[in-house]
View 1: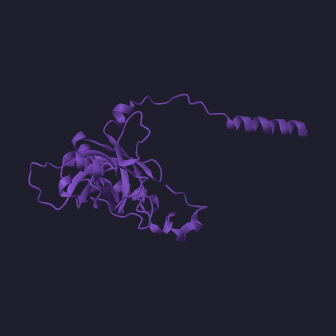
View 2: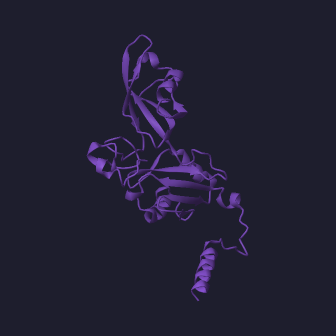
View 3: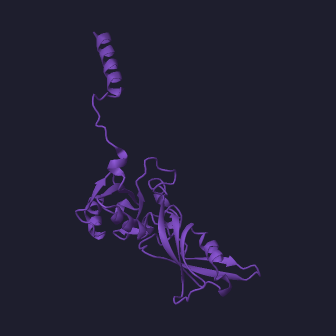
Length: 233
């Protein structure tokens, strides 16, 4: 009797571990269904409520009832747009935040590359640029140390009415946002270039990353006790 029971239990365990075969799976055209959509990821989901984001973002984007959101997890989501032009308007605006913390947005692709949903577009304002560096190539070389340059709103042949130069980059969200960096001129002089980031709000005051606040920062010596439970992004 014990032998039969033991055999039955083993067979039950094996049966439960086997994948269940479905008789029917709807044939969905992924490109047609997702082609006009954005995929996204919250960078600090502990401070960003997914259910609220799904309802709020279409209103913020002014596409209410022309865009629907889908929560995929507590940090991943999708927004499907009725209009290609409105989707492009959202993408072209640059960085977006929710509850003052940043999010990553990229257009849906059938085969995502390795760096998918790991960068955000940011317009950077560069201040204290030496006059001799007011050259398109020099400007791109400077800001290229922050991220991949995608656009530079700089023309040396036009008047410069602002005290800064604007350059758009793709920023790796795992890195810190430097407020300034020192650069050495060919003559040996060291110059500190200051950076400001448009549409970026909250970040960690300790390490300057976008993925947590100071109370959860493992780079802060005061929070070393969190090391066993908190993962550094």
